[in-house]
Amino acid sequence: MKFNPLLVVISGVMLIFAVSCSKQENFNGSFFYFPQEITPGSEFTIKYNPDSSNLAGKEKIEAIAYLYNNKLANTVDIPLNKEGKIYSGKVQTTDSTFGVLFKFKSGKIVDNNNKEGYVIFLTDDNGEKVAGSLAGFGEALNRWGAYYLDMDINREKALQFMTEDFSKHPQIKPSFLNSYFQVITAVKPYEKNKIIDEELNNLTTTNHGSEEELTVLTNWYERMGNKEKSEQYKKILLEKYPKCEVAVDEMISKFKNEKDIDKKIEIAKEFEQKFPGNDGIEYLYDLTANIFRDSMEYDKAFQFLQENVNKPSTYRFYSVVNRMLDENADMNTALKIAQLGVDRCRRELKEPTSPKPNFYSESEWKNDKELYLGYNLFVEGKVLDNLDRKKEALEAFKEAVQLTNGEDETINELYSKSLVENSEYDIAMSKISDFIKSGYNTAVMKSYLKEAYLNEKGTENGFETYAAQFEDAAREKLIAELKDEMILEPAPQFKLKNLDGEEFSLKNYKGKTVILDFWATWCGPCISSFPGMQKAVEKYAKDDNVQFFFVNSWERVDDKKQNAKEFISKNNYPFNVLLDEDNEVITKYAVSGIPTKFIIDGEGNVRFKSIGFDGSDEKLVEELSTMISMVN
Image (cartoon, rainbow, N blue to C red):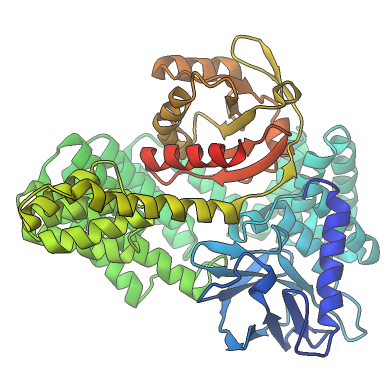
């Protein structure tokens, strides 16, 4: 919470420990564990009561544990047993585990202890917290907790936990310096140079030549502008650890700087031999496929993907075919690439070509692979539809809907259209009504429902009443979901200038609903969301009580104002763009990814926080409109 970050996190953690001390099965809090003292490598039991959480009354509840040391080490599903109201499960730690974070979820609804995470700090044989357990939690607060647990980024808290751990266990500090410097940069911008320089100087005299220490010296001396020292430690690092991340980054840069496509492919193959198993392999093969895609050399793209079918990401096949559909390119070639992608995705589900990422549990990893199979089936269906192979297209769309759990409006729309085109009117009525009720529909799908209704009933009489019941159900569902997402936190105050040099201060909008949309010109999802945001702005153009501000931040160019001005002018967006050139406001709002929207009420409180864009303009406008109505 924003009221007093330090007190809130301390009290939250103390509450977890207090609850955990109880030996009784009946407890008042949501979460506890036993035994009270957990040493690395041991197993322990968690108990969870959802009654006082946002998961109260949910049928199915899942638990996911995040085991950390100086970084996120592994993510695991925790099978739960239910006795009465209480869920319980067992968690196995490793010898290198410092602490464990938890979240509980039911579908898309997550209980993460009010954005702070349920945390357990492991102890040593003397009952003291393991060295690194507090600093590791600080690392989660700084970065990865926001990405994987939807925790609030809070670098003030992170600094407090790191400082406490470092004072008790100074020997751990080198392994946390990269994250610590990031925190210092955000929390103490005017002191950062002095603090970081002192720490780097200390490290030069105490470092033991580990890869981690040498990497910190190389990277942070460069960031501090000391090129000479950066090169000095870089030379030592590369000689001692030729497979280090700095070496990886250098070879990726070499690939990017090479202009000749054949030489790029040679570099990619050399990279693969030099760094087997490195994530950069997939990245370089993706970039190569993109070159063929962007130059519209689709035959070469097919040949490249066919020869290296297990090396690019499964998304890349979808991406190439999607571009071919946009360009109305040769559909026979597109079908061959789509089929390569579908076959590759099916193999990945059965026999993955790479190990599970540490940020996914097994169930999340499986869901992710199923999602990309769904996307590849979707574009395969579109190609088949273009080739007038309607029955095959329908089967592809049907499976794509199943794999995406009916939660992608674009896929749902094409499936609905295909059902009607294949005269599957009764199924169309059932499926489209379900899509509308769930809220995962597009505006055009009502016309497909009407066509199916007419063909099935023989008349349009009664259709509007029939359709209205599903639209009403969707509205009620959306409101119920948004009530669960509603928060009440003071909005950080700010003053920023817009593209015309006018200054805007949040405090001047008391009594009005303010929508802040954080974005950048390089951010694909931000740009994709703008047509929908334009519709929302135009909808409220005459309502003086609703104000939209588009906060341009995290830009990577020298002239940020001109960059934003050219983009807005080129696209003719009617947006009031505020320039957060020093990234101060986006840091105040603890934004972890963009686009992120904040809906602020007339009392100056954040009531909703919405991250990302799911691709539907209609849904974006509907959700924003509903949020605004709930706040007013």
